[in-house]
Amino acid sequence: MDYNAEYQRKLTPVDEAIKVVKSGDLVHYGEFVMNSAYLDAALAKRVEELTNVNIRTTTCPFPPKAVLADPERKHFIYNDIHMSGASRKLHDKNLCNYVPLTYHEGNSFYDRGYVEPDVALIKVAPMDKHGYFNFGTSVSFTPNVCDAAKIVIVEVNSSVPICLGGNRESIHISEIDYIVEGDNQPLIQLPEVPVTDIDKQIASIVMGEIEDGACLQLGIGGMPNVVGAMIAQSDLKDLGVHTEMMCDSFVDMYEAGRITGKHKQLDKRKMVYTFAMGTNKLYNFLDGNPCCAIYPVEYTNHPKVISQNNKVIGINNAIEVDLYGQVASESSGVRHISGTGGQLDFITGSYDSVGGKGLICLTSTFTGKDGSLKSRIRPILTPGAIVTVPRSINFYVVTEYGIAMLKSKSTWQRAEALINIAHPDLRDELIKEADQMNIWVRSNKIV
Image (cartoon, rainbow, N blue to C red):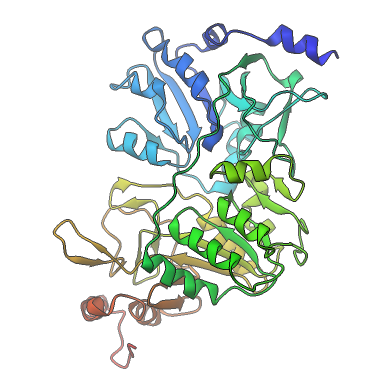
């Protein structure tokens, strides 16, 4: 095949390519920073021509113009598989819905025919000499979306870094229906997350749980970033990486010589991930770097795969934890905040890893609307809150006051352990609540 001739044959002006979308179609966008604002803008122009078009995405970091053009949802119905900050704000306005899932199972939705996209709108790197377009920083679902889609439209963007696999990191020109050359806008960079003194206290406790040769997973947020910064400045040796998200902290750790991956049992010496979000420092690090390997989420996040590495340390945030050990990381009451993501996958996988630890980290308190101090460790979860990690699966909980290991503990032992890491000023009230809930023993000791 003459790939250049095929490229020219499929090259289409964006407004022409987007005409393939019909009323009633399921249109699948890309993932994370690989969402195409260029293709979205073209679809938004057709708002008055179309009705009942379902749009799906994974963590789109910007509010799509197609959604903003239709505030009454008469034309486009928008769904996010893992909520971004932008999607959260749209959800508050009833302009976005969440797709509940366990992250590592997501590709099965396409493989089994549960989700059959009519059109996939995907951002890619320029074609190489072999006719392949790299998917860039996100392959969680994108390869399977393209497999399942009736029509695949790609936006070629020269700012996309070439992220090496792994597998399924590219799509061949023979699998593409239309090629659009975009505006080459740089990938979106995440703003710096504010770090508090309490984040640093929690990170210091987490650091005490990490050994030489541990295999790291970091979630999103200020506290995991602090852990990465502390590791970079520590004397830890030969750490490995098997994570869902690749972030700037991993670059700092690698360049400080903390990451070698030499003791990993799986993908030795490779930093394994399924998507990346950060700054240009991260994107430049990933570009053509053979020490990094991007895989679909069915590999990176499957607990059976995770557990094949020893000493897996999974570090994730939460909104609140109740005295039974249930973790809410997706909603504050009925207000949707985020998605399940890889938290449940890595808590499960870390437990099956030899020497592994899954850590749920949260500040002990927050300030209520009335200005009073409220505990994030609660007797029961806020009514309407979504359980992200069931009490039977939860492993470790960390606040600035310490760490609680919950496996094998009865309900009263869990209550005792969690109250011990709650804010001291709020412990007496938690004890009263635990007593009323019949999960308290008079001989309990609170430190």
